Length: 294
Ligand code: HEC
Image 1 (cartoon, protein in one colour):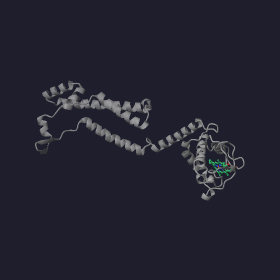
Image 2 (cartoon, helix red, strand yellow):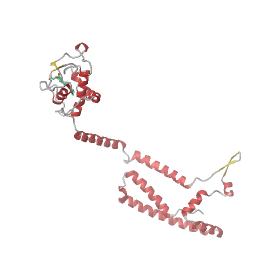
Image 3 (tube, protein in one colour):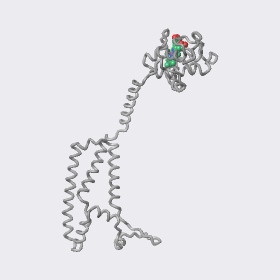
Image 4 (cartoon, protein in one colour):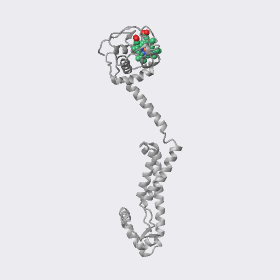
């Protein structure tokens, strides 16, 4: 007669499984105080007790049918503490007689194969894995428990909001603080391609708006080239509303203007002008004599 698992271990296993399943569906530990969890736990514990009571009855009936020697052996075994019994069981090997019973006819070169039972803990884990897998896959596809797209959307929105918040507080360059930096040229080019290229042409060669690569300028409110561009992008042209006030109108931030101004400075000062012969617009305004520092 096999020894049975004590009731408290069964209760612990059931509670453990309930914790896993409830956590899987709620994703927080709030369920611990919920009526559903406590109710399910209570009912499960009662079921375990009922199952144990039925087991006791069956055990008693079987016990009565044992011979005296078997009864003594069974009682002796039952006196060993449960965990010690499990521990011993892990190292128990079959007797010669038992081995004969489970010998498979696969002998080769004197090596024998035994049809051993799989260990209980292994089977337990295996069945748990299968049940968990079925539960997980079916709830993933059939219920509302996992919604990766919704979660992605939510996180995406939160991040965009966080970036906007950050942009509101991040210090923005002003015409006083802005400086030319080589590092801004690449990003400035992207801003130029998005906002300015329609009028000022590829590489600033001019079109509806003037050629930005030559030395002639209609508007010269500032003394240095970099600040002049910053001023024009921030405030637009007083004489010609086609060139709008990108900064004042809230389309570009101070930091964006600092970058696009760096790009315009770069194509004007660090590259050869695109002349009319090369497809550039003819010079407009007067020749500028910029002060060196930017
Ligand atoms: C809708 C067409 C248009 C767009 C888009 C535009 N501009 Fe202009 N831009 C003009 C016109 C037209 C002028 C000439 C204004 C004037 O006559 O005073 C001008 C003038 C300028 C000037 C002064 C040039 C000078 O000779 O005085 C700068 C610098 C400039 N734009 C930079 C930019 C930048 C940088 C952008 C992108 C953020 C941009 N512009 C977008 C049309 C445009």
